[in-house]
Image 1 (tube, rainbow, N blue to C red):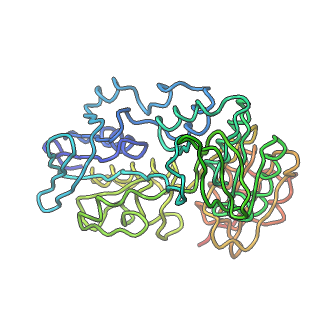
Image 2: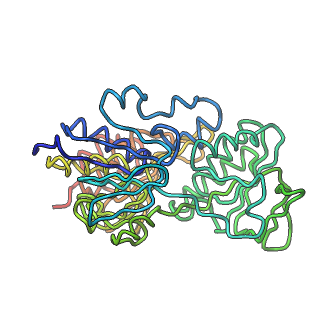
Image 3: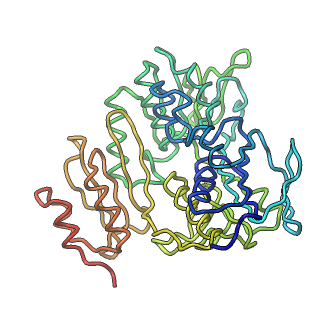
Length: 416
């Protein structure tokens, strides 16, 4: 790499992507100034445990940190917490902050993440209407997740379902309200949706499908009921909204960068301004396994893009592409998903969903493009590698649990 001692890398966003980029810069030998600026008062932390172990009380706040504050100091990474960036001036390579001096940069990394999609109905501003995105959100939610409390969960995606499973564990009474005709409709195939519907109902979670929300009702300023599209009401003590997120791209757009469902980047995470990078939830980049543009909301993607941006800044070889993957913990079921379920023309079931341990392999034109494994780590690990290799496994072998995943991997044919 070139001499970087006089360069400054400013990272906007102190989440998983931003924190990983700062750490990767130091590990790659970058010797210049590294500034990690975030609008929260907390040091960089993991978000996935928020709807799982942190919400349930199994882990304390300090267990969420990506690194200890002392480690950031040892790495000479300057943390600027509670720092809200307001403007990027590309002509002078300068960022303005709401509460602090302007900061010039040699390289700017946008790791601004995403924000919750607000519920667009009357009553959404009542007390007791919650979202789940940061530590403060979860700290507020914990009060509601008490024995006997009735919680209306609007949205049958991963966040809503994970929260519902924690609510049942803590003795609360969740009811999941989903507008689509199945759970996880935007991210999963019907067999997985059916499995989780049965799992939640088996744990006494009430689930309403094909159900729209018209308004929220309140008493003395606090939410007390959800008014549904058919005119009926569901009484509740609180509401948790989980209807998706929006990329934080506004500051990039105002600076003249290309944005389209996220900040547009190339295969090296560079934006339309080559000195500015975008990584994590806010970035719409070229996925190096699927060779097409996509915006992914996942920790592994944030980590991979952070390492890629750091390598590009340091003029080092790009890290090896990795298959996108995700995970979800609900009740006693650990879901591990590899790849993107788009364009699937065949799904192979391995194992028996009724036993709580199985895998779904999704193929397109004979090639494995995605997989979902519930309590089945070997299938997940094998699928992750086969997808990266462009493999075309024999569907009959995938379905046969008497054939090990290792043998199936050895028998696959990579796309030439």
